[in-house]
Amino acid sequence: RRRVTLGTLRSLHKAGDPIAMITAHDFPSAHVADAAGIDIILVGDSLAMVALGMEDTSEVVLDDMILHCRAVARATKSAFTVGDLPMGSYEISSEQAVTSAIRLVKEGRVQGVKLEGGQEMAPTIARITAAGIPVLGHVGLTPQRQNSLGGFRVQGKTAESALKVLKDAMAVQEAGCFATVLEAVPAEISSVITKRLKIPTIGIGAGNGCSGQVLVQIDMTGNFPPGRFLPKFVKRYGDVWRESMTAIEKYREEVKSRTYPSPEHTYPITQSELVEFER
Ligand code: KIV
Ligand code: NA
Image 1 (tube, rainbow, N blue to C red):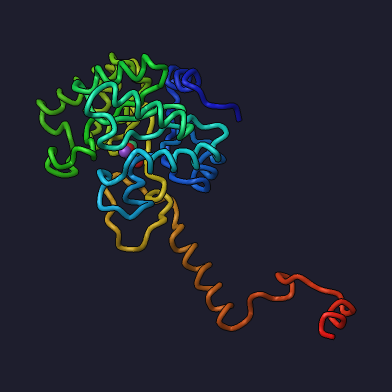
Image 2 (cartoon, rainbow, N blue to C red):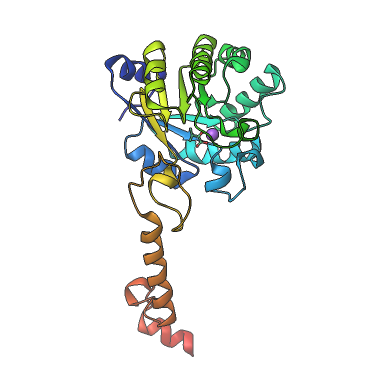
């Protein structure tokens, strides 16, 4: 497969072909996503919770993102790679945002960056875009602002808040975003917004009318312990946790019973060398 570029994404959008995006947080998860033919790999700040065990995304810092972006970039041969700007790395000023975006690209080796926010972030998006760095928008539910939103709530359920999501999406488009994530928005609203925009929308909990979809890989592969809360929009396509558990339990049993390692997993030595050694 050839490298996915902004041109590739534009062609997909123009042809009405959905864009498939997924998160990756390290070398193996990027490797498998890339091999599976994913169009965009996102190093999301969801890594704070799903890969680093933090309470929420506000705990992750730019240096953490850079480390994980680098690992993902090393494994990605064809997908377009995007890194999340974490909370605190872009809100203070456009200069701060450009500096952080440049670090994600230069040190993290990703091709584009994502930041959360609509109208209020437009000047910042324009500055990063002007620096030659593709920006992916993120409007609707913006998890970094969960405290001011009053938690993880669906956005755009009233006419007034739906209009705000539309205005935010239009603003990030005008500011130069090549696409925007639409998170936790009723399907009908997302469809209207998608039709109004020239750039693709990548939905998460935003219904089937978006130009593409994104999910957190660990959620959709089922790579988490039973009983964990999952948002309504997550579809579990696999049971990676069970698969790993079965393998590791078997290994543990074989170690305890000295079944592992058997001769096939052991280095041989010739009888004469052994005799000489033992002398
Ligand atoms: O951090 C993340 O994984 C994200 C996607 C879910 C859009 O922002
Ligand atoms: Na994110």
